[in-house]
Structures are given as structure tokens and as C-alpha cells.
Image (cartoon, rainbow, N blue to C red):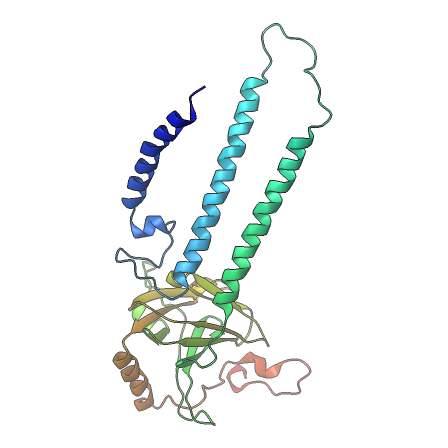
Length: 298
């Protein structure tokens, strides 16, 4: 048997090799090939790093458990294989208390640990800003998106909005990005997005933000975060919502404060002010409410 001193000396080059290998990894590789990261290390939001850390750590733990389990299975197959000349059944064991305790306690520790870290991170991600810098309402509809940038007046007369259409593919199936509904966000500002549905269940997913949240009928959800990197990012509905679900796309542009204010001014100049129109809002005719059919459904 090798001495402990020799084992320690053998571990040093292994550790150095591991550090060197990790140091050579790109930012994307270090975050488990998840979207939302680039080589300068700047994440897309203040929550992106946390989500990626939970994801990669979970996979590392699961991979380690898998390697140990596969190793023990292979060891048992080799060591306890039937030898030439052996007959009959092998020696039978009724139980082994240390092993039974081990495979009961260790999985319990793993499950409790993963639950703790998931619940801790989820609570922080789901926390809402008490006083956000920007409030936006995202409204899902079959099969597009409307965005309303809330104002500060009591009657919301200073709000501005855009109404989107579903993706428009050409003959080759390529999507015209210029016609996609666009959500504009200011970088470095505390943003709260209120999520509503006009008809069926949808899901608001900004891919590079590593986050999606369902939009239920009659139950509004919210999401608070801070965009931390300027750029254009893809968004889509992540809940099967009907025939043209695949065409329910949008894009997110994170811009400077000046560009954001200029965008809002352009919407005001176009007359898109006040609360957003309720055209095509089928929720106006919920059963039992006595409401009349929405104008857009007549």
C-alpha cells in the first residue's frame, strides 16, 4: 500500500492539471454552455450568474454520484463474476446494515441539500422590487405580445405601449426580425415586468436571461431584475398555446438610459399613450361575469 505522503505528493500534479484545465475554459464553458454569457464575463442580468451556478453545481454533484454509482456497478460485475468451474448459486446475504444505512442517508442528504440551495436561490430571484425604476406590463395573446411601459400619473395617462404581431416567415422560413414585438429595457435599472394573458396559458421566456415564467388567465405574475449588459436578446413563448405557438416570438433590446427615453418619446409622438387597447382581449367575456363580447371578437 502506498504511504499517505506519497498519495499527497501524487495529488499535487493532479490538482495543478485540474486548475490549468479550468483556467483554459471559456466563460461559456465554465457556466455549463448556458446562454447569457460572453467572454468578458458580464452576465445579462443580476440573476443570471446565480441561475448558472445552481445549474452547473447540480450537474457536477449528479455527475459525481453517477461516476461513483457506475464504478461500483462495474466493480461488482468484475469482482463477483462467475468463475470457470463454479456451479450453483453464489453465497447469499440477507442484509448488510452499514451499506443499507449508507444508501439511505447519502441520498437523503443530497436531496435535502439540493432542495435548500434551490429554495434559497429561488426566493432571491422571485423577490420583487419594492420601488422599481421601471414598470412594464407584458401581455401575451395568441400569438404575439403587447408591451405597456407604465407611467406615474394616477390614471396612467402618461403610459406608452406597443401592440405586436406574430412572427412573419418568408418563403424560406426565415423570420423578419424587424417585425417582431420588441421589449426595450434600460441597462442598470431596476425593472419589474407584470405578466398577463389575454386568452390561454402562455410562458414569458427570455432565453439569455435564463428565466421563464408562466402567464395564467386571471392571475398576474411579476418578475423583478436588473439588466446588466446592453444587447439584443431572443424571447419566445415556452408554453404550447395553440396552432401558431412557434410563431409567438419577440426580442428584447437592452439599451442605455438615453436610448430608452428616446424610445418612449417616439411612442408618445406616435400617439400610443394611456392604457393599452383591449382589442382582441377575450377575457372580457369570461363565463359568469355578464360582460359583453370584446369589440375585437365580434
